[in-house]
Image (cartoon, rainbow, N blue to C red; front, top):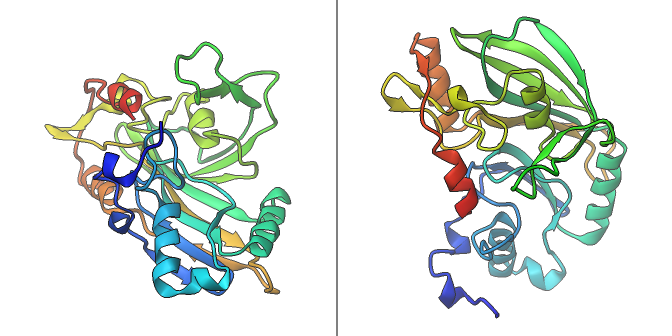
Amino acid sequence: VLVGPEDLPDQDPESVELDVLHESGTVIVLNKQPGVLVHPIGRHVYDTIMNALHLRYRLSGEAERGIEPHVVHRLDRDTSGVLVIAKDFPAKQALQDEFESRRPRKEYLALVAGRVAADSGLIEEPIGPDDESEIRLKMKVRADGLPSRSEYEVVQRFAEATLLRVRIMTGRQHQIRVHLEHIGHPILCDPLYGDPRSLGTLDDEALLERQALHAELLEILLPGEKEARVFRADPPADMAAILTRLRAGRALVPGRDVQSARWRRA
């Protein structure tokens, strides 16, 4: 059955916010907002970044000159931050080669449950599908998984949470979420890899409606350039507000698991 715009009236590409950090003739770099899909999946057909970009280039006339967005790396729907997208096929190939080389520097901010004891650490654990999970996309640390490497450093400790900066040298699905859960510090509000405490509140106010993970920095060599560029994005309002409240001494307490049902409905 074909699904048209009339069947999904709330999925308007014009409603997708495009916070542009940089744009040239070959690439566009965005500060992706939380809760937005990069590309169509399931019943989310039109309300994605790719649809919004297609519309942008049709309206600007660039589509007539062969400009078309191409995905070269991904952020999860509920992860915010720096995202680079190619605007033509040669740029796509160049950026994919760059990511496959593992030269780009990718750093994330992650707010995790509990006080992380070590000031820094290295997680080298293979990651593969979680065959025991009902959720097809869920991953886990497993001996026969793909090699995966994450480094972290403590940015700030709170009473029952820690803000980490995480650098990934490989790009496995859900890598940061899986690795941090594996060391006993799941990302707060993570619907797949969290625990009851991570789905809590600050006093009587709800925490987040997504995992507290933000792609803060991407250093990458863009097509046709000789030196790498560094792109940064500040945490969005929801995550910034939580950090402000934690810094003010607000208490994290257990909450009900409202995320699993939300995940299953998506």
